[in-house]
Image 1 (cartoon, rainbow, N blue to C red):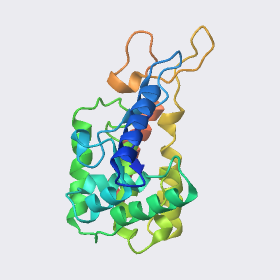
Image 2 (image 1 turned 30 degrees about the vertical axis):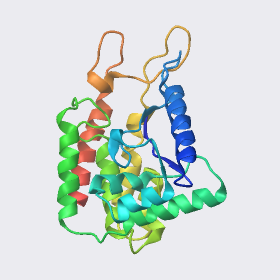
Image 3 (image 1 turned 180 degrees about the vertical axis):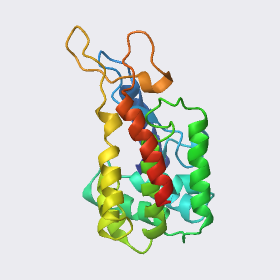
Length: 243
């Protein structure tokens, strides 16, 4: 499981920013550390304002300015559709989500955004194996990009669909009338399949995620079941029809 994690601090003061940058670095090291059960999360902190060259922790005001007056791109606003606060006081979490809502949904939708999102999805697929259950053809990203596109399109006027989880967002989009029941039910049913796949139990009895999806099956690894590949193909066709 991967996580794109921006770190927000309350003020612009140098001491505050330095503390949260150091805290963020330590947290990333712990999450990325390999243990007997693998990594807790693969944290990618490059997807933050100003990229890997910028400060790891930014203030609320700096984050807000980046999206309202700065060079923020469509894919960055799209990524915020899944944003949720992980830790902080109730006031800080509320303030952070207010900024996220402005950043993600204040830009009026334009038809060319759909083309840009589709092209971005195709670029992700270029370097992925056909058996990659996330980025490959019909992977889970197809469902996620469809959901996020509809959220960006309608979320500015309809706060009810500003839901971070993909499955919950599908239900919200259906209730609001942006997806038919059949389409929403189809994507709800097919989306969890790849995440439920597990490799056979090792001799010590511990469960480990199957890694065949990354670079194709290797010795000692489980092959991706045919039903998952079939579901991926159907998911790709379904997302294309909805778009």
